[in-house]
Image (cartoon, rainbow, N blue to C red; front, side, top):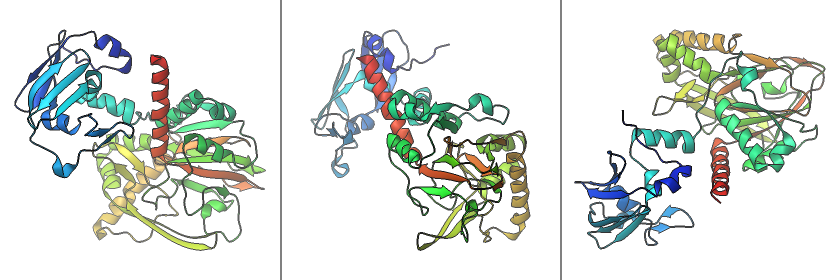
Length: 402
C-alpha cells in the first residue's frame, strides 16, 4: 500500500535530488516527484497569500505584510516553473512568487503531514502514567547542568511537556533558585501572590496552603482564565515530621473515566463550575472568579486543562436543579480515582530539591506536618516553555546541518 512521503529536515539533501513536475488544476498547483504517483496540492489562494517576496513578506520578522484590504483572493497562475529546489509562479495580477520546494513540502494539506507538524512542532504528545509507572517516567536533572547546558535545559522541558513532571536536585537551600531556572526559559508568571511565593505556615492567612494542615489534591489557581501552566516548588526547609507530597496524573484519570463511563466523563466535561478566590496579599484585596468545567477539551476532543480545587470551588452553582446530584456523583467518581492507589503517588521532598509539574494536568497536595517547613514557589507559562523548546530544537538542527 502506498505511504505518503513526509520529508523531514534531514531528508532535504536527498529530496532536492529528485525531479519535480508542476501541473495546474481548477484551484490548485500540483507538484509531483518522479518516484511517487501522488501529487502534493496547494490552493492558489493559499500560495498567493504566502508569497515570500519582499513586497509580501518581511524576512527578519517572519511576518506576512500583504494588506488584507488589497489582497487579490481570486488570483490564478498564468505561468509556473519548478526545479528540484524552487517553484516559480507568475500570477494574473502581474505578481511573481518564488517558493522553496522543501519549505512547501512541510506545509502539505494532508492529514499525515498536519499530524506530523502537530506532534513535532506544535506540542509534544503527552504520555499518561499511573502510580506504578511513576518511578520509571520520573526524570531527575541537576540544577547546575540546566543552567549551564542547553541540552539539559531542553531535556528538562521536554520531560515536563511529555510526562508532566520532573525533579531537579542539588539546588541548595538558598532562595532565588527558581528565578534562575525561569530566566533560562523566559520569565516568571506574575499572579496575585507575586512573582515568588513562600509556602509555609502563616498566622491569620487567607490561603489554606499556608496552613500546616493537610493540603488536598488540587490544581493551582483554577479561578484564573490564564491559569499558570507549570509550577516550580523548591524545598528549602523540610518539616520535622510529615509534609509528604502527593501527585496524580488527571489526564490518565480522565481517560479511564471516559473509557469506562462516558456519561460521567461528559458531565465533568460539560458542566461549568465556578472557581473563586478571595484573599488579601501585600496590602491588597483580591476576588478572582473563573467559570469552567473540571475537564476542558479542545476542538479535537483532546483534554487540555483540568480544574480541581475543593477550597476554591464556589458555592454558587449555575446549573439546573435536577443536574446537581448528577454532577456530584461524577465529582465523587473523579475524586475517588485521583486519591486511589492506582493514581496517587506520595514522596518526601528533600531540602535542595525542586519539584516541577504541569499545573494544567496534574493535581498536587501535601500531608500535614509539624515544625518549620518552607517551600518557595514560582510559575511559568506553557507558551514560553514551548517557545523555548522550539528555539532549542532549531538551534540543534542548524548545528547538525553545519
